[in-house]
Length: 490
Image (cartoon, rainbow, N blue to C red):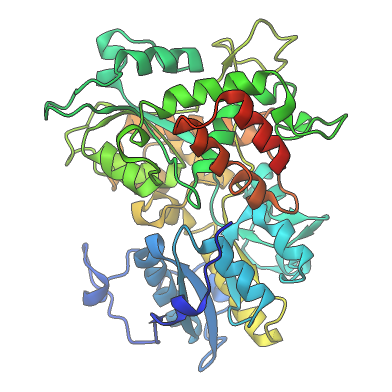
């Protein structure tokens, strides 16, 4: 794994001091004082911390692609509590894990970490995170059990709570209906369907600019979400008997599943998808680059978390895609019967929603002072407030995904505040049904994947997987060599 020294991020601090915010009406920017998250709105959770930290300061790790959104949230929290939040460390996708890891092992400068849920075991074992169990139990207005059970599980380690989830991550698919069903291709329910679509569009130009476009758009970059993408697709083949079976290790032998014969078939399938993705022309390509390709009309199928997918859907009118976008679950493996796949879906496929990434969470530094820990944790609670966080998961620039049962259930009522929040960002009523169905499918499924919430999870998914996949995609290795290399790395 490449190491990124934190001192480089400190050279460009993004310090946000407390200021006076003027509430205005309509849309606007941070510069004119408008905050779309209504920092003046009163909720039981907010009232429990009003004016609690006047004149105090704590440090928060921020993320480059969420900076605008986090600035809004910081402004609101500063106004509510009187605290001064310092966002001095601004991590990129590539440096995020190492920035947290290096601070835990080094200076302890950061008081509140944002991280993926499956990173928790690594950071807890290093003694870096505070046990939040009692705080969660006692927090007014949090409604912990409204969070989807699978997501709550990701926030715990060794039966203790170490994180506050603000995001429900599972890779989903978005596709162009006008380029699939409308031209007679099958709805992508299985990976066989996806291969048929991929072969149909192989090296074809479908946006009329004379340049071959892409059947598939997803991350193939190291230190991005390339590893997560691979395991999300592989899981429907590797885990067929329910969540307890696991997708990574054989539960009886504890050998990695890369040793199983089906693994080479998975590698062959995945290589075919990659060769008709931007990797074909550009090499390693991150999720943000793939987002731009889909926005430009160059992709048929898009695979990512719901968060980035919101950006595409909210821009569908501007990009001429209104009425063309279908928000769907990730395809599955075709099954013979319910003996092979006890949780077989009505379409005859085995699905294994990949929750092993864990979604974005907030964790408190174990080395911060008691006052700093309390301020940091209150900000995490503020982010998770069930009475207002439906706006956060609807807002395109938050990149956060639905995670609360009440917010998801409310999407069946077009007049609910949750539905209205999505409609305000150009979702259609039909797409509201899609996001409800997909979210509940993924997080309530009996075969979701969660078994890599273990020590070293990030390294398993990324640095022990991606370099070997890239050699295969580049033609240096065959599937057998790739499977063996992954096994050896694990």
